[in-house]
Length: 133
Image 1 (cartoon, helix red, strand yellow):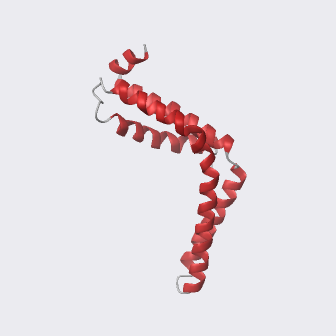
Image 2 (cartoon, one colour):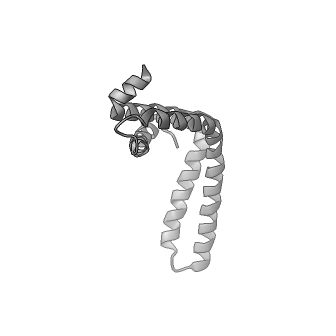
Image 3 (cartoon, helix red, strand yellow):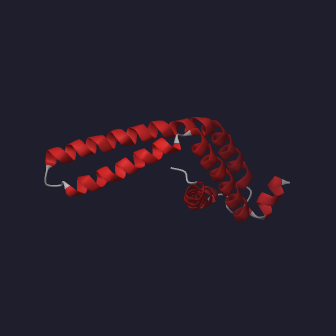
């Protein structure tokens, strides 16, 4: 039944698949990361970027600010690693299945680009609506 829908409607099917996966990934990120801590880190990073622009003439100060920005980026990456671990294997399986399913459609060579495009747009929307940092 799903395969028939995919073959008959490949573009809507890939968009729906992308929306579903992106929503699940966004929810996993929201519930498996410390959103308060992530917001604090992002706000601090923004402040430091402003400071960095203001202190372009002082190389030592800029170096110190850039080091702190790097440290914050590393900490943010550590926080975002947990959702990646949770979703990695299911995503591999899903992409293997999708490749098999879309090979018989008009999107055989471009389904991944449709997926990426729909995913980028829906991710922006879901993150704003669900207040995910």
